[in-house]
Length: 358
Image (cartoon, rainbow, N blue to C red; front, side, top):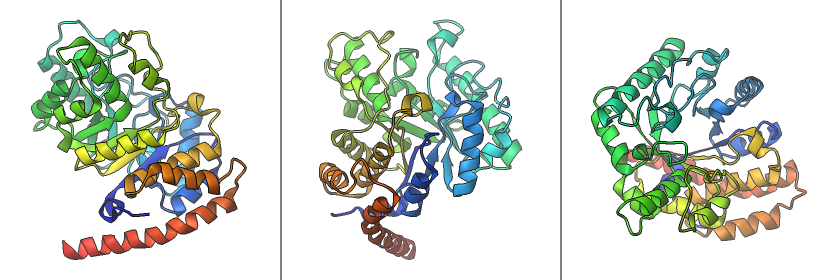
């Protein structure tokens, strides 16, 4: 298996926290440097999940991908987005977890929360800057750190279509970038596929793919990529006529296929400044209740391969399914990781060489 050692040295991989997943799974993935940390499920988490997550991170000592918390509602361009930002009882404890003072949330506006349909780009920018200011002030007050905030593109469903296009996102970056605006972008592959299909169906584009969307985006500003399985989305988007206000399976967050992880590879090539990939499998416990340990480990391993290896993701999946049966346990998992530990030694070596050459 051939590897991209430069990417291995500097790219971080996070995966969604799933409440029912055994702690040894997180411990093993972290100890073998498959993942660098866990992504918090965000605003949909229950108070019990919040506490359990904080306790788990403290025991693991890993980093957090902070994508929101209870008290934040809606999107970055929604009025009143941050009005209840401090309503999370454990907020100070949460924000002081490793890397949790950095934050990402959705660019765009929820249709139901818009004050009126004639709101202008300037009005959107004003709302965004007010929300970003409240977030930064809260994080700085509770941690003493300056937050870096990235905005994630969303898709037309509950969201105003005007705020989901590359042109809107680019203009938002340009007009707010010098005024304590966004520090970068999050490219969510599933969101972008839906948004590109909507633009193809409703605008002047006869054909408009995911890659057209990325090429029109300020892709050099993308710092983070979100990936997850498309599941029913793929079938929905193959239809000529989609009801974007009713089809609720446009962002299912299921297990990724090898083909979908190859798409991740292509997106990484188009976005040269990405430093983090977050796998959003089953982003909320209600979606992940049937997720097995095998499914979760497979997702982490294949995403790691897609990021770091130059060889086939399909071949990696064959090896994983051969070596890890559905009845595997922790000791069997360690056998698979023993090979990957050798690779990690090479990663550290390349990192040392890169630092030496700087």
